[in-house]
Picture 1 (cartoon, rainbow, N blue to C red):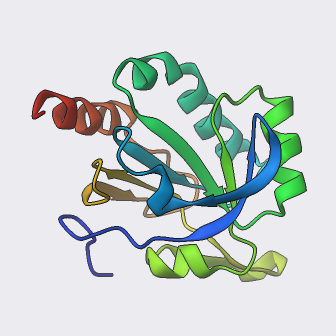
Picture 2 (tube, one colour):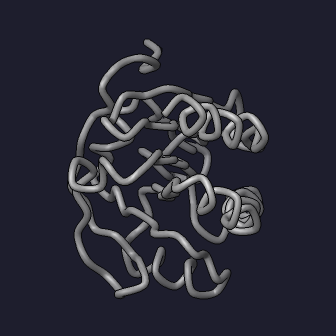
Length: 163
């Protein structure tokens, strides 16, 4: 896979589950308000994905203080993501990439052929600056691996310090 660091992040428009219910979100429209964290995850309600998104939820105040916005992205249906968001009280939007376009653009497509799921998002995190340039990327070697949360926070803090 080719690294996206120092490249312009691929833009997209997709369904989103947020505080207003279900709507559509375009990445380019979200730029300019601070750093963006894109957290790709394979499947809502799975144990590792739940732990990952709840860890981001628990650290949300730190990201808010840094003016960063977190978006979770998976290939789950928007309604499943809305329920996942509600059940676990996730304070950030979840983006539904049901056709796999976003995961393909970011190079984080994988599958779980043994249970008939394909394509799904490989667990990955990208941090974008206000212009949409990728400044940090982390891609899991296996689906059970979680991100280095301190490294994600550090990447965001470094962006803020550089302003």
